[in-house]
Image (cartoon, rainbow, N blue to C red; front, side, top):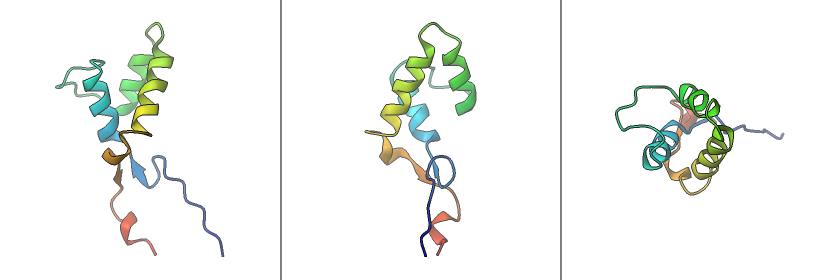
Length: 78
């Protein structure tokens, strides 16, 4: 039997990395209370914002991958 797993926002949360990169890149202030979707939407409406969002994602899925977290219960899956 083969089982396929989709990590992106199904098994793994990238929220911590997204906010860390956004803060380090001065895209948001450290006290910004929004969600990841609100951050994405905020960036996308700015000139060049879609590219900025893509750059942020590249960092999160690359060198900041260690900031990702398994959702509760995933580690117990067998």
